[in-house]
Length: 462
Image 1 (spheres, rainbow, N blue to C red):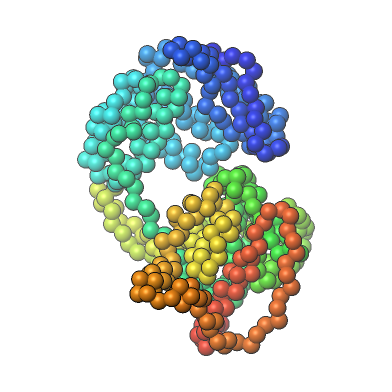
Image 2 (image 1 turned 60 degrees about the vertical axis):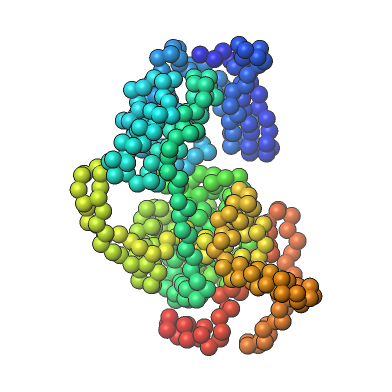
């Protein structure tokens, strides 16, 4: 067991919000240098960081008494226990970790952790293939096992991670779908014409701002700033029906909203207040924006069932009977499956429309709450074929010897087909770091179709 030396260290990342903690666990017997424990992140105030530092010390000192007799099953259980106590992981992630650990224990649990080799792991994955497991499933199990073994390396139980060189299939990037502009316009029209409730409002928020499901369902009226036309994402209503911090530090953000969304939310707030008054309830700052029929937070699973049916009714999905071999029961099983757009793909729609209309990547990253602009580029750049076609034309112009001026000259603006609108006043300066470049853009995207087409669609939607 490691011997913890001293009281440990607390490093302030964001004052009063985020801290890093770690302990010194003695000297390396070979290098004679002091060794530090892996750094952990604590979300909370400094008092919480001190509490977590002490818990971390106890965890390190308990460890395993006999490192030579630790089985993979024992260590995987301890790893999972730490994950379950973490405040930084979503309940769904922890649930999936548990499922993967059960399979790891079934395949390799009896092995001593220092006896697990790359060949051993490859043999286990061959067994999964014979069971009919998909490449995606094996990839996910390998991911969990790799994390377990990486933790064991850090704690000095094994010299290297046997998963580094295993023959595990790479997971194919899931194809992302986004609504076309025409589909987005029709959905917006349908949402306006439906009887308004918390479920309808959640879908509108995702289409207009790109928020995640949990972020929409966890939004309170105190987070809506009508004067500055923005909303604040500071929490999410998680899978386990608990209010938690957003997915990452960057996910805690202000998002600008367009005038249409301001009006939509104001109308809904007034309607919600009247309905609550009839029930003898008061609407307050802590009232959820997206309320259930009893004016509390909406059950995430119940919302997903409603959303699938709503999308089917509005031409964005369908139900199909699918027959699939299920290894757990050893036979084919036929069930009804939803096929179509999901809620998360409204985020993809937001990003695709914005990038396609020229919004810069940093703005899109901010609106979506991605941890980095490179992630936004990696996920969404391939979804804009029109930009790629324009780039191809630009290269062709250059190679054909056309002038640089002709190559770089911006295209002439299209003739106006609608009466010009008065210029909107410039937005007030914002000192909170919110990005307002696209706060009006997403609203105006829905007005980009030719007028005759838009009129036709609106008539058919009424």
